[in-house]
Length: 405
Picture 1 (cartoon, rainbow, N blue to C red):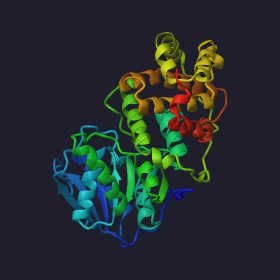
Picture 2: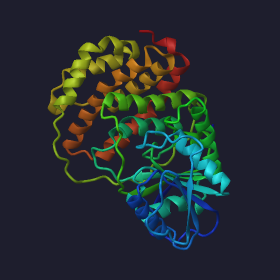
Picture 3: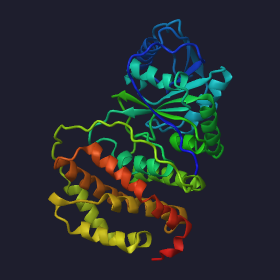
Picture 4: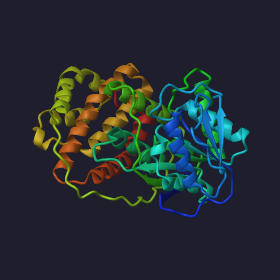
């Protein structure tokens, strides 16, 4: 049995500043002067007794006020052209961060995404401490989001990552990470494969990378922060971009996740008892019903008869009791992953056909949570269903011809 990567849970509580056990590099995105000033103030508060390196792209003209003596500000020209995508970390970000860390003999790297000045000093310190003090290779931020935020993550990214890679970080595409030098080097090597073919905007999946290497993973509760929004407002485009990247990662690491893996203990979760406001799910259901008529022929190329029967039942459910079973959601996502691998249909069309099914899940989630179920409980139940049904994906992956629509 393959070993399971260690998982650590940390909290952003005030602790003593990290000692000089290693040289920390903080890699920042491009920031305007005011934002950079605020970020430097937060870094000085986070590491009052520690000298750290702070890397900012050369396009930043610098802070309006001198940085504290403990902060060594490095203005650099990216070795790889920075990606135009700003709402998530990309291949270029990982490659540039490692090269700067290596050139400046850093032993750990704190890679922060857009709007980092909204991070509390305690959160910044806790992320770094997970690597510097607790010896994790990867520390992933855990964000405090509202019950209707991050639903693509809740419906697909988190359950798939947890089930296939036996790793529990709630936000596997987090934009705030702490990396050991060997973790930064591993991510840079993966990033190089994309930047060398002019795909600097490509997503990387650090949790899957760490799990495959059997590196220690920590999850750090950092509370609330301002999360940047993607420029693309079209859900079809956004979901295809994110899910397509994850599906490609699953395909590339099939040899790893098909091996038997241990089950990690559940991390403590807080279930909100606050009532949720009613949301108009009619547009979501209208999209699903329209797709059921127009996309049924495509779905029938991807989904087995039992799943199609489940969708038929969904199509005639009244809105106030609309419910997609967790097992059906897991089967749908797994079959779409398999179809992505086999190129059953054009991948663009495939991912487009996933959008109305995702919206059906969102509508079901909102109906369930509106009736009193804690949103996080439903998401954890969904993730458990993905874990339970992993043998289904393994079987279909190895013997896809057993189901031939």
